[in-house]
Image (cartoon, rainbow, N blue to C red; front, side, top):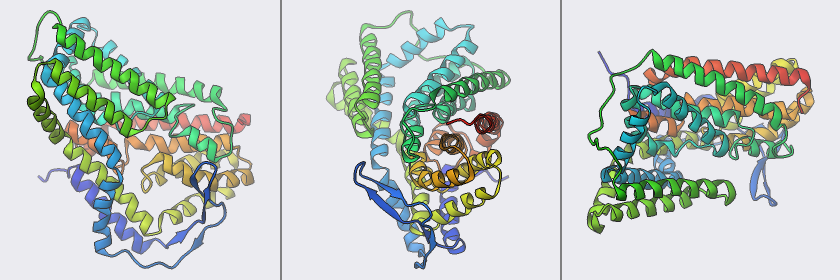
Length: 444
């Protein structure tokens, strides 16, 4: 019996499929202009037109692979440095000791521990849109999960899946709803109360569903190799520095508008400091750090390959055609139905556009005048985008972060779909209800 393809093979197959689509889907383009005030390129509404352009050659398709990897350089740097940092901290024994204390504290309270994980990542998702950073955290989360008796799928759903749900329903996700509101010319953070209501509903439904399915898929608890009564002094310092670094990074993301580069610098400094505190010396510290890089290479390449898919579709001039084909028919249906169909269209569109920030910048200028034309409020238009596009990050094989996490967790993509499909449909059902009610009450 043949094994289901791994993440590398799946993404290469999608790259090939995307290249084939450039020969099938008509080429077209929207006009774009530079917004000098925000230094951002925006799409001109109602400017789509078919174009003539040369076909992408097989060599151009191959070029998309290194272009994709280079284009995600800042994220790859973060994953390497963050992954190396956690690998080094793990080798100091501090994480094992810390986890041992935590497991002892939570003994007999595994459901409570899982609920805490879910709520933590839901919070990280709706505050700062945490996603890519989970890649480097995955090995530690899996270790923690095994000591609680939860399998890899459960832990990935509880962490990565929860972060995506939090980001999708967030009233102030800086990379999602705020960009979409700005492009839709809405007041930033407007409509918060309505979004908070359905965020709470989604959080409760998601948490109860995940805890329920986790209880049916328990595994034998793993034992940590290190089992001592108390934390060593140097490991207390290391864990304190880890907590301090996360606090600094969170502050930087929210207040100082930090990106991946600043985060990378913080975690690189943390890794070196922890190595010295553990008494490894400079040579051993750097050698262990390099070993940590090796653990993250596969995840980094997967992310670069996924970015290559978007490059092929963009250079093949078919992304705008897909956008035009998905959204133009919406003007022919009632507003309540068009709102839900808009969410479904945004979900489908997330396949060729794996960046939901980029998707907001592309679609909002097109959908805003369309929404005005069919009597749909712009807030509903933004709701449809954030629910449809962002939630697809738990499913789309073009999402490099998802595929990287699955690769590190050793989860086959087909097995993941079986695990995630029911909770995803539950959340999308809640999202559809939110849109229908918003249309009926005239949510502005």
